[in-house]
Amino acid sequence: MRIGRLVLVFGLMFAAPAHGADLTLTLSGTPSVVFNSTRDGCEPNDIPDLNPRAYRDSNGGVTLFGLHFFNRALRGPDFAHLKIDCHVALGSPLDADPAHHADRNFIAATWTPDGRSVSALVHEEYHADDHGRCRVSGELGCWYNSVLAYQSHDGGANFDEASPLVVASAPFTQDVEQGRHRGFFNPSNIVADGPYRYAFVSTTGWDSQPFGNCLFRTDDPSKPASWRAYDGTAFTIRYADPYKAKSKPKPCKAIAPFAYAVGGVVHHRPSNLWIAVFQAPSGGVFPVDGFYYAVGRDLLHWGAPRLLVAGKTLYGDLCKAGPSIINYPSLLDPTSSSRNFDEIGATPELFFTIMQVAGCQTGERLLVRQPLTLLMVESKP
Picture (cartoon, helix red, strand yellow):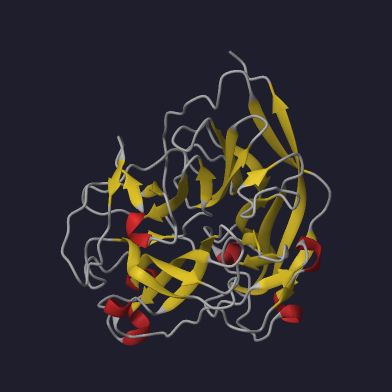
């Protein structure tokens, strides 16, 4: 499971999305299957296991990442004709040494200026229980996450470590605070706004650092040392590798209303508004389990969450969830003029995973896409 399980009651104050305009999203049509884990994989571990990320390659075709930790891409001339490429673009060494940041790697976000040079934010999981380095029982209490930088120079066929490797990490090593999920994890897609590129990154927090989603910014994703997190006033926070340098960074600001990982964020150019989609369990401002979206006038100021799809997710009890659950939402517009699909027009689609559940375990997984109806309306004074 690639999402941090935070069971929260989240009370928040929200900004209005914008003066004079608002956006609403509703599902329309029926879902169509992009990838079926029992039919389409190169091996059994080829399963949809995080939020889909896509870009156009240098020939105009589509590349999409969103499978497991032996990262294979779906490629095709368009979203309707994606097929898995059995070549592993980024593997997972399952390295027992946490200082190497090389246990389980997931390509969680991509950015390309030209379809050939591709920068990636990688969600790296260190599972201390797999390596006999955990003092507690249970997977979640042994789970330590960092966000890493990787780079491809061949359109995403192969990714290598960038330098410096660490983009976001807790300021302590994996043996500290065992008993809970720790670190930074699940980056959103990377989006452009003016001269900068941005991504949300989730954290479970520590000491003075609140849990939630922090906003990161860079002027060049191919230079990982340039990523900075927002501290509430400016983008000043640079995270160091805790295995190489001791540091005590300022807390990054948790951006409301994202108590849970941001699955996808896009810019609607006609209204100059932003839309973010994420999943959440019921509680507090979330009346039911399901997918929610929020509308923002910029990347720091968002309106209240609105229900998009009701349904059980991985945040709940699998033994009570069957026969299927929904997870990993992302917004993509196949007609987008953006090479990185970070902008949408009138025809956005919701990409997400449907997982079959039996015997308290997930089975077959379907990556699906479903059309959305987007309406731009006048907001109330």
